[in-house]
Length: 143
Image (cartoon, rainbow, N blue to C red; front, side, top):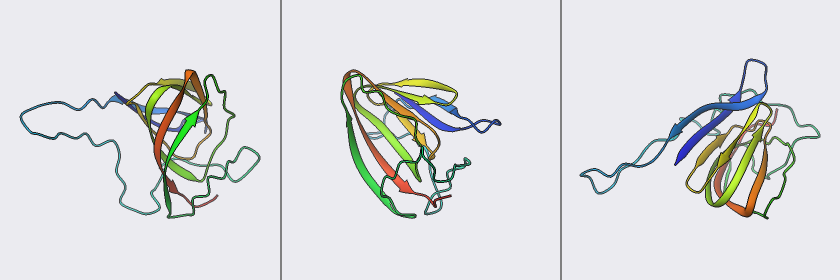
């Protein structure tokens, strides 16, 4: 399994800024964990500049400081449009495959893979069997 964190480069374009293995290890303890991300504030600090509300903005109905836990199902081969939100999204792929497209590159995500998206430009394009994501969306201030 893989964890990817999205951010922006020096040019202000969305891209992958961190990618690492997040495969739990089985050792002598009955439970193991790997920290993917943490926050000390609500709403969380996305640590990435965000755009103001514009034509590319997608309203996910999450108020500042609020949260939503969702599952999202994409139909097979569904191309998504580029958008940004006022949320910090913690997503995990449950089934299928999906390509996360960014302004500078893309990444293929498979079951168990996780991604953190701080409201920057992105799009989802599902694989030939569709895709199901589960995620926690944290409301950020609108800019």
